[in-house]
Length: 598
Image (cartoon, rainbow, N blue to C red):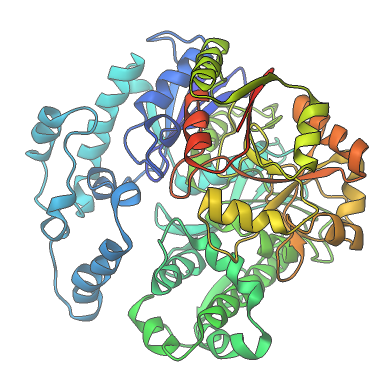
């Protein structure tokens, strides 16, 4: 069976499952080069169909994650084109009158300059569609018409009949991804989803039934469980981009001291609290922006980050502990935007009754495309032999012809081109060179995991400033992460439960050896790390390079960060990599058989 899964929203994404296995997945931003692109994923669909050798009309099903979809987000390009000022304007001109003053402002009148009718399928078709719906694009009553418009796009790009296009619940797709993408199986597994909002809910609890399929046991409405939206609004209150820079708040939190974070923490504690597997309120806020803005005005910036993170960790640990106990589970899988909080996952993993835990890669909405495939096969087809993700290298490969073209350009432009070997690249790393690695198929998701990565010697923290200031233009407080070979993981971090950590989704305390030898890849404040543990089976060539570095230095790990300019998508093609190489102070651009040296 050939199933196309689609996530149509932030980071619109396409994935293909063939015979119960995910064979390809990519987000539209990797092709359009527009960060967080929410356009209909034409190029991603074309890629995954080609990768599966699937011709027009050969798909069995197209599954869209979500039963209600957001027209205004798509039409107005909210995730990819809005500035922080636009988001503040949204609060002041739309939500404040609507929530606090009893008015009914018109969303598309306020943001009419943001309307983009030139995107796929073109201005003419957008005009025809918009004439059939109300003049308020925030109005959900036109959802069915919008879905039909999307179905027309799907028919034109895949050749499938409309009767074979279906929608599945947002959190069902998150849950299916959490379980089926992981290696954990069977009864005793609790599946938690958690995010800002999806089809009316923000969290669900599921278990595995007697037949081996997922059974949802509990749903929490979005207005009751507000952690995802709260984190988003606090991100904006701190003048960072909501739905994009929440990770910066998490990265800032460890710098705050207990006495600094207490005031903000007490504000958060006045609100939502856990009651079994439900949530109640001490004081229900009038909204999640202005209410907190007023109460956090006199709190330090790092205290707000630390107080929010501490509050989130305590809520998630109590909620998870109660759910594990209620459903008599000792294994956990977790997905949704909240699963991207690696520091919360670090605390959750230590729950006493928890024996196994796995957090699949990039659990935000981009993973819903894969989740949609899994959810259809699990819920509708009742399959129980779905194949977990073997790795995340599900995107496009770099072609030899394109690499040769780049190498020729590099020679003409005065760069040195040489044959690559693990020995030579390891020596360059030891010399303090920063290497951009563009090898093999691109990773799916938010984390670069070796194939589209900037790598460096992790032993000296001096390299952090070099990468931050001359290459990435990133905030000074944000940590890098290590890629560590499986043979040396016990030397590097404390993992008493022997959890699998291949995707940088769980943070761990570093060992003394890890602190000393991965200083550039640990969090600068608390010395924790979020590892990518690399096995020979998951990425043999990357594993061999790190192994060679270990043979020369005694350290079986490298600093790893995403190969991109700040605010831009991770590089996809060899040309993308070469462009970033030229615009930055990256010393070496590594392809499979050759490298370019400045």
